[in-house]
Every structure is written in C-alpha cells, then in structure tokens.
Length: 163
Image (tube, rainbow, N blue to C red; front, side, top):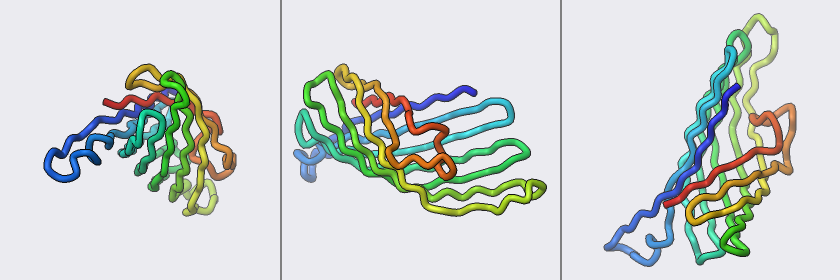
C-alpha cells in the first residue's frame, strides 16, 4: 500500500478589516491518498489556525474521506477537529488535536455484515521537529479503538507546512 499525506498552511492578509487578526491566521489543510491491491482512499481536510505568538496556535479543521476496498466495503467519513500547537523552542512543535468523525461504512451484501454509521472521537498527541515553516513528526491517538477507528494504527507520522 502507498500512502501520502501533506498538510500546509498559508497566510492570508485581509488588509481592510482587522488587519492584525488576519496577520496571525494561516489557512491550509491536508490531502491524503492511499491505494494498493483493490484498495483506494482519498481525503481532503482544509483547516485554519490562529497564531497567538511564536509559541502558541489554535485552529479548526474539516475532514472528508472516501474509502473503498474492492468486494469488501465502501465508506465515507466526515467531521471536524480542534488543534493546539505549542513550540517550547523554535525547533520543537508539540500538538494536541481532538477529532470527531462520522463514519458511514457499507459492506458488500454477500458478506452478511450489518452496515455501520457511528461517530468516532480521536485525541492525538504529537511531537515534531520544526524548521521555519515545516514540521515533521509523529502523533498518537490516545482514544484509539482498533474496531472503530478509520486509522490502521494509533501512531501516525505527520508533515505540516505553512506559509
């Protein structure tokens, strides 16, 4: 299986209304693509953060994912998240992210498995190395449930880029 995830953030300057506020806002998000033998997954996840200062930032995000495993299931996942970023020193980024997702999974009829529709929470704690506008690291879902999670593992690498 091949997997690719990229998060990016860009600064928008709105000049006329609350210029100081908009100087601290970063827009961006993530794009995910995974595929393998009979499997496809695609994700769009726009987000925005507000940088209070060089150390602290808070933000919100949306998530939309489509998965399909040939002759097995199809699923759609929609939800949102809240993220907090803390840089104790410029090179280190710590993060906490709460995510709430609605999972709608439809199984192939021949499998005789009931379709599923449920809400799934995730609480990710992460740490990474940061160089200017790029942070690379790993995060862990402390609420991970192997039976319900859309993720294969509670550990997930991340790349965050913001401009």
